[in-house]
Length: 224
Image 1 (tube, one colour):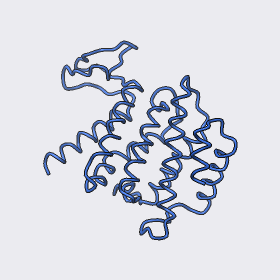
Image 2: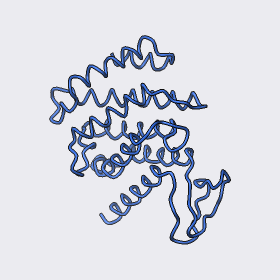
Image 3: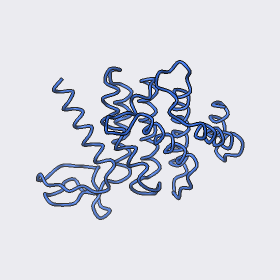
């Protein structure tokens, strides 16, 4: 139990790193290898008192490790892992526009995929409730809003692959959220309002009919 809790605290710290543009090293010389960018130069060590800036690539790699953890952890640990990771991740994702830095499309894509894995493996929306004063309904609606924004948002990026990956991940998460929420046999459904459901299907029909991405059209058609 002690090891498990220590590991969860490490996960929480890593999420802080992912969702923060810069951190300050106050504990001495630390070896950050490829995870550190300083004045656009890779640095293998950062001295005490220096400010550390994490690149989108570094944050994406860290988020990918969380996807792996979400896929491989014991089912009994899914809720604990989700409650350590998802609230800060969702707050970060909704905290500003998708850009080429702190909210790079690849970072958002990885965060969406992590959320998708946690929701689908648990087959429950309980993983979106973290006991912070906001209800499960609040978190489900915020996650839904995040997913729609990733699908609809106008993003300036030099990487079409990154944008495509983000939008596909968002579409998959939308499917998971709505499927569980609207399941008549689910004990924790009904979080999304009728207007949110209508908006969801409007976005899906648009993606299925006129989206420029063949993969988006195909997945949206499959969902519909």
